[in-house]
Each structure stands twice: as structure tokens, then as C-alpha cells.
Amino acid sequence: MKILIIDDEEKLVKGISYNLESEGYQVVSGSNGLDAVRLAQDPDVRLIVLDVMMPVMDGLEACRKIRQFSDVPIIMLTAKTEDMDKLLGFDCGADDYLTKPFNILELKARIRAILKRTSRTEKDTRIVRGSITLDPQSRNTYKNGISVELTAKEFDLVELLIRNPNRVYSRENLLDIIWGDDYRSDIRTVDVHIRRIREKLERDPARPEHILTKWGVGYYFKV
Image (cartoon, rainbow, N blue to C red; front, side):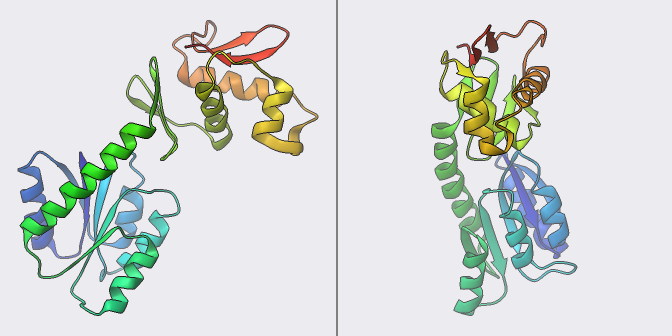
């Protein structure tokens, strides 16, 4: 499991990293809020330990920005002890809060508890169909375990089809469900998106195995 450590105290980062790596975690680190936002975009990051007081961008602002695209658990670190600071952290989207100085054993215990809880949630929500894995919670898609970038509409299309295997949807149905009234008059939009999805997810887009066409009717996902 990959854990992101963001703190401008180099010795603290090294100490946390050493302790986590000794237990088998993969650790990536940064020293400011901009690093946190950039590194948090890695879909393999499972948890973030984020300091509040940092240069360039503080931890609270970084937490707000991360929450715009990710639900990855965040543990805030701070030297402050006022309750208001903790409330601000939770308001920004933090999952837990630890005041410096802290015992590394307590941090590891909190990390284990959060990862155990979130791992159980991910296991319940991921959809696996053959070589394709869909994670609706994070909106990530994988082909043979490798991350595949889908646009928002491409993901919505795949999720609808994969949740309803063998059900045939006409182009009009898909336009109505995925796009609404904006694209009702142009069914070619669906064909273009299906072609792009096949190029990204099928082993041979010319001979798809999963997202198939029912000639004269529409598209469906074959189990």
C-alpha cells in the first residue's frame, strides 16, 4: 500500500518513512501543500499524512484541493492544540487528527485502522468483469490491473453497461441516461464514445469481447 507523507520537517518525514517502510508500506513524500496536491493524484495512494503548517501552501488548503478530486483518507499533523484547529481540519475533509509531538506507534495504529476500514469498503464497491475493473467510488478504471484514463462520460457509459450485463441499450436510451436532453438529436455521440472506450479497454477494438453491438438495436456488456 502506498502512503503519502507531506511535512516540511525533513527529520520527521524520514522517521515516519522508515517506520512505515519497515512494515511493508511504500512511502512517497513531499514538503509542502503543492507537493501534496500533485502527488495525491496518483491513484495508487491509499492514505495521506498531511502537516498543517507548511510553506508555499498549508495543509488545510491542500486538503481542500485534494477533496475536489479524491476521497483518499487524510490524517492531519499539527503542533497546534486548539480545538478550533482540529475542527478546521475536519471541515476541510480530514479523517483523523494527530497533535505533535506524537508517538509513532499511535500514528501507525491509526493508519492501520483507517486502511483496514477503507480496504473493506473498496472491496465491496469495486466491480470486476473479466480483465476490466471499475471502482465507482474513486471513478478509476483498470485493464488487467493497469490504470486506464476514461473521460467522465466514458466512465459513466462503462459503469452503466457493466452494472447491467447483457442488457441492450439503444443509442437513444444511452443519450437520455448519460447526456440528457443536450445530445438527444445526435446519436453519433454514442458511437464515438463506444469506439473510444473499446480502444482503451478491449484487447482488439475491431473484435470486442466485452462491449458489444446488437445490430439494429444498440450496445451491451457481455459477461
